[in-house]
Length: 130
Image 1 (cartoon, rainbow, N blue to C red):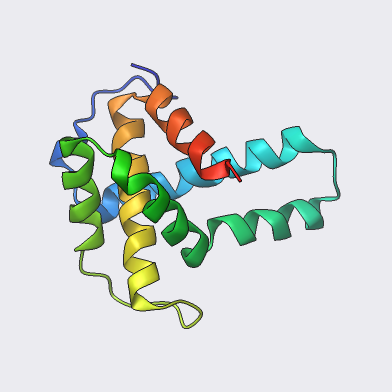
Image 2 (image 1 turned 60 degrees about the horizontal axis):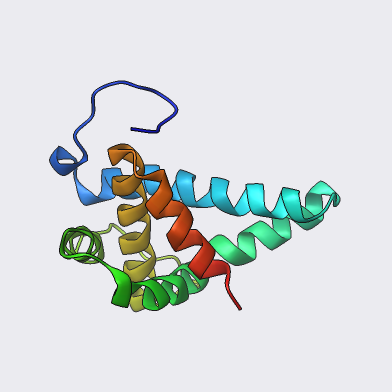
């Protein structure tokens, strides 16, 4: 198991939105690390590039790219995230994109809490492919 904290945590017992809360941070850390390792840029430039990659529409595209590769378990977690009841949808995104982005974040949170960093790295590498 690979995680920052080594505390017991069963992601199967957590709500989809709780998993998405963690997954949002995990996904953003992947993006930030990639951007910083690519070039030493002003922080404002890094921030703008990061926002472009973690927005709903970008995450929805990433989800669409990855979905054919999901295992049954990953598909079930993704579906739980997509079907989660959200309190609002940001005005800059469509409901479909927002639900897909939430589903991707749910899956990233689930895999992180399971300690499956190799699978997360594989997914992120595929997302970043041109």
